[in-house]
Length: 296
Length: 202
Ligand SMILES: [Zn+2]
Image (cartoon, rainbow over all chains, first blue to last red; front, side, top):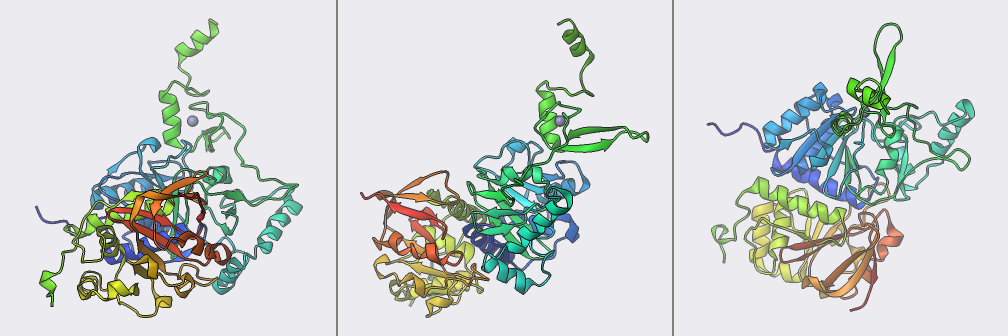
């Protein structure tokens, strides 16, 4: 057999060293965006090249990798990233949150509580939470340096004045360790509380914008809010149609062209695990169960 | 004179050894006060512990100016080994160093002489790697901060004895500051700039 034509986990060693040094600084300064020299990856930017580079820099042969995209392990994006690392690093892969040591994610935090021996790697498109207020990098950097976050609060308060509530539903800004305002990537704000005091290490990679940032384990992460308008994690007010969960983040699925719809868990591993454990929703209840129920 | 061929070797498997060593250092940095083990071994020149040697091979290269304390600079084999295996330029001015290696803690320079980063770029700071006598026994220290679930306890025999008092400059400097990595043989403990330490005495 020929030797593989690629490096372990694709990246060359010099690039890994540079990314590893950035990761250590990111952990030491929670929520601060460390610049790094992002490399071209064999996939387009929208496919999570920042997260892929972070994963490539930390992954070892004994890791078990899970990749999720909007909560699902089975989108084209998730499958191709999982295959990429299975091929280049020979790692075992899984869809089960509890079995994974490294979880790369786009747009969700798993419902199953994370543990100390796990690392969650986020793919981040726009790492700068102040960018929509201030396009100039020198200015946003100065605002972070001075912890000058008044404009961000003004923007959120304008939402309240216009809509009666804070309209931001995704990428809802957080303050990390009472210092840096940070963009949690386009996760639904429902997931924000999971970042707070989390036992797992959380790493964020933005490829196009060339930034790495981190939340160490057991670190305070607070969603920005106001005394009279406290932060509220939003969720559709319904149980999952497949597993009956009332605590999970739901996707709304259109079922026909008559306007029919149903709500199911966005986290497919969580939903399948609950169904396997015997939980049922309105669409999946087995007939014998209904019968048994009707007999009292 | 030692020739290059006579220098202690680097990692046997560069790629996997660096990955394993990095994960130990990353876990140490993410969980301050926890003792992590460095498994892969490389040859280490005199005055350099094997854990320090593995960290150097994992993180140093021509992009990381390196400052060495007087005892290390005196070892021409050590300087040659670092140059040959890592390519890191050794600098005299510790305020421009990415990493500093300290073998004799009693001669640790005042911490504010190292790079502290800037308010805009607090990551442009020196990571100070200090070799210590023990990370298993000695004085007890209580640690708090990000990465720690409540309080972590570290038993360690460290020089300088007042290291943690000196590290209190991090409180006023944050987000600038000094991150410290302690090494004792194959054991490593990190004290990032966010960690607050209360000495418990003996
Ligand atoms: Zn479900």
